[in-house]
Image (tube, rainbow, N blue to C red; front, top):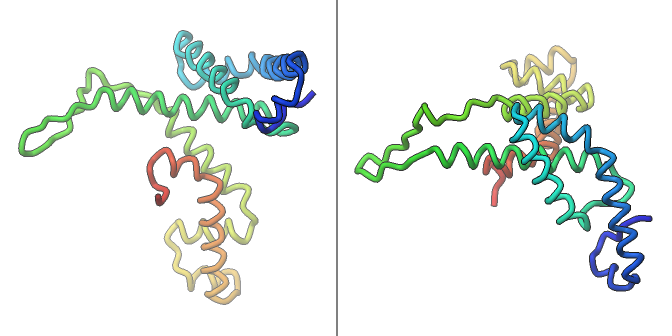
Length: 194
């Protein structure tokens, strides 16, 4: 039994049917518990932090279950919630350890003794970036990568035997596709225009 996309649709259902739909969602989430535990441990590198991350992921998933579209990838949705929660928590910890000195120079001081070293965030960003580039159509990917490596438009056009305008279009379309696929990072890093 599927959970309706809108919570308003639940008002038309009997309390027993609503409970059955909630139990179905709970069962579906529970089926991914082991994979989520492993992913949480991979991200945090700490058993207690992994447990906290897992609990926070479950809380967000159940709080937002009406946003989950039935017949889509629940595991992917849960992984995305977990990854974004981990990134937000990591940033919160780093920000908490950044102090502002309100003298004339207004320096920001990061105390190295309280710095939290964790390369998981940058590794995830690079993995997502490489995956997004890999799924681009060949023509777009090759033009984009040559331009990224410093080749001029004319050199790329000569290499493929196509007009320079086509090269510019392919690079533009590749950038546009990557921006769309990686928009979550623009939101997280404050790069998307308001």
